[in-house]
Image 1 (cartoon, rainbow, N blue to C red):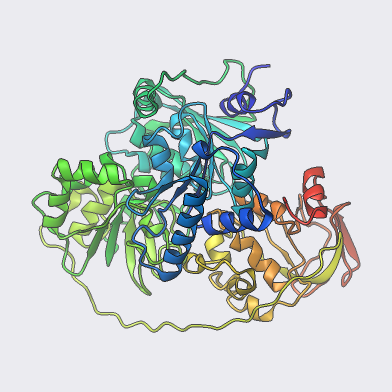
Image 2 (cartoon, helix red, strand yellow; image 1 turned 180 degrees about the horizontal axis):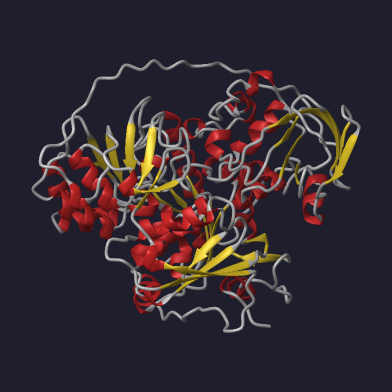
Length: 601
């Protein structure tokens, strides 16, 4: 049988003989990492259960979400990890290093055909070099640390052919945003995606990283590129050994194939609120901005910084606008320094930070305030993700040009006189919430339903990143949904035993376990959705928190406040209030086993 890229990699890392979509495989992991976000809970699980470390040479910690150590809770967690790492001889890439997934590539921890897991939801960035990278929750990473392997459901694969000539004004970020405009946040949900084309073969490593990084925002398991000569040579230098090229078999089977005309791609931005809500930049021109951000795992590479420097040279940032620049790794920071890019940034009036995740993590460089409008090269602009303001996603070229202009624009349309500001005064109100704790987990539950009729509810809407330093599950429930418009009072009003029913792609976004544990803290008895984000689904199953999927709700006549009965083993959902019922998808064998075991461990 011939295999796709993901199937070939899994076949080389598993004892299973049947490697096909839908099968469960135990996969040996070449690189197992945890960050300062999620890492403390990994350590806590290992210590509480008395687990060992399978292979310290393949085990790592990366401190990238709070690289300055400026937040007290993060600083405590980082030191907690350091002590554990010293005890076991585990390497720590500390706060002076940069983004962990980028380090995996630059330091040879991952290579074409290898496997890696970390608590970073953008670990699928490794698809840029033809490696299998996955973001996973705390329990999964603890299992990888201890066992050296994790269970994984082999996904179906999709092939995207980008045909035609790439326009000169189309960056890798533009390619990502165009793909988001085509596929949205869930049309590729749960698929492994392979991208091909004559122009694709010419993409640099940095460009591949940009596109693979935004696979998470498209709902994909991973976006793969077949390594070209440049990537192979880079990885051979990083690993110090000969690398065998990995590629899909000629007759591999794909669930779907899409032929897309690359020549018709246009420069785009993602509008505030969702990466997949896009618009041509020509229709978004002259939106006044307060701040600009260049960085993140998507666009903090040296090529991105060179593009920005080329625009900023001999120019200054518009009055009242703050430009924040954060390289993705310390190696890239030093390279930018040696090339004179840092001086150009500083002369232009930009603020340059040490390497790290920056704007994606609360308390870091790149966050914004209430009423603030930011143009960002990051990968996410969910409400609250990068702060309390509005965030437009764009290429580094657009961000740099906009910073000089004072409004969203392109390099060729920077005005001689930048835009000015009107003063704004905005009040922010805070809410206090209460905590509830779940006690029982039966296979049949009954409760009042919350019918949340929205797609793509991401983890920042569920449990905002400003609370990520919280590790006590009893403190988590009070923050659930406080960043989801219309449901800010959910945690106050929800009662023990309530059931949440929602729509497509629930839990998309980051790998944070708190977005699951917070519901358990409140006593929610189940979450039922048409589909879940891939990492969220794993986190819930591994935590023995009940989740189910449905094909449709026709016939249930559902309204918020109805009283339901749900059977996890049969999939039967009964609306006791309306005397209606439907058959949803019951727990899988693996899910039921983990559930009956009260968790992965």
